[in-house]
Amino acid sequence: MRRPGVRRSLGYAVADWIEYYLLHGPGDVQGQPIELDVEILHFLACTYAVGADGRRRFDEVLLSRAKGRAKSEIAGAIACAEALAPVRFDHWAEPGEVSDWGYEYQPGEPVGAPVTYPFIRCLATEETQVGNTYANITYMLAHSERIAEDYPGIDIGNDWQTSTRVFLPDGGEIRPSTSSSAAKDGGKESFSVADETHLYVLPELRNMYETVERNTMKRKAAEPWFLQTSTMYAIGEDSIAERTHRNSKAGAAPRLYFDHKQAPAALLEDEAYDDPVQLKAGLIAAYGPFAAHMDLDRMVALAHKPTQDRAKFRRYFLNLPVSLSETWLSRHLWERCALPQEVEPGELVTVGFDGSDHDDCTAITACRVSDGYVFTPRFPDGRPMVWTKWDDGDPDAWRVPRAEVKAGMTHVFTTFKVARAYGDPPDWRDECDDWAEEFGMETFLIFETRVATRMCPALDRFKTSVLTGEMTHDGHPTMAEHVGNAKPVRRPGGLIAITKPAPDRKIDSAVTAALAVEARADHLRHEAARDGGSSSFTGY
Image: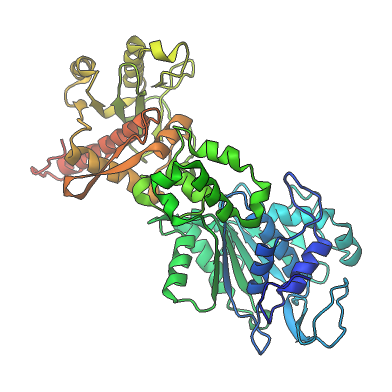
């Protein structure tokens, strides 16, 4: 057995158990025997290191690797071992001692025993799925003939793909949990795993993690521990992964093992990133032995596409921490707020409009006043009120169909009760004047998005409503793309505006959504001031 240098560890026997019993989970090598590379072997040796008293050295472990490094599969294999294998110290090996599956212990090496009543929790970020780790667990347990022979009686339900809980033959279980269920089940965990903790940025996900983390202190004899797997986080989102890394760097968590591999930090600079040789070498450094399984030349080509978001590429594939200064609002945060629903005709709404002539997107966005639900209005035939040069025809000759846009605005005003509408006038000044005259100058108002003191607070309000989870929206893909494209830019006075990171990466419907949300806030403030008899209202 390969031994990468950790003297006292149950990890070598655990690694051998994984290779003997388990098969690769869903993917290109599905069903093939697992052979751990030296980097993951070292990770297991450190993760299962024990002290002179035989007890675990680490209660919390984070495996930080680039996207595609099979982190979820590694976590799934560890979970299977925690359920069945000898993973807690029992005694020190005698000369010639051999495990039940044929592993030859070195004299004095720690020998393990299975956990009594293992309770394993797999945390998932969504109510509608149980996570990649759990899918690997159920596949591995369902398809290993050696598991079936040596550990009869495992119950995964009818099918590994639809399993919702695994019952273990001698008592215990493996359970996937979401934020709504983790807090309800008490605290019996002997092992918990959280996949992709760079996504744990919303309050309910942080609370879920912290609840289960507290539970891991309740079973002293079982020596519970917590495993995180993650790609590198965005600095400033305060994700669980970022918090864990911060604790590690500060030396504030002596029983935390943080295992991180990344490309050289020089690749945070565009000069090195633009060099294909340096970029490929960085990918090799980030992926380690697993680089042999990656199409590095294709990844380099992807990195250099004009439309590539470099901040995201650096995070996902080079595993480098990237400052939020390069991204205004993470797309996954926006997508978490999607809750598509019908808005009934006659509802009170506010409207945002941003128009172009031939290049940028033109969009109309609405916001329901009662609850702040943001949506893209549609024509009676179902077409959304978003117009881009890629819709049809020749992009170079395309022009915004102004008559259609004007018909769309009329349809919105006749279908809904519009409390207030904000329109950005460049290229559409005449139309904005016409709408103000048609719909009322106190209802349709000019909103100059180029004025930082006006637009930046609107953007801040919009972003805050997403970060706090207060906003819901219809999940329109164009708006999701535009929100994800937006790049922050600092204005005088510390104000933050947004801009396009490249000419063909549009942000227009993110702007219209912010205008619609700001119009709602101003309307509500105006109504509150009027009802209260205040004469100091200056909202518009």
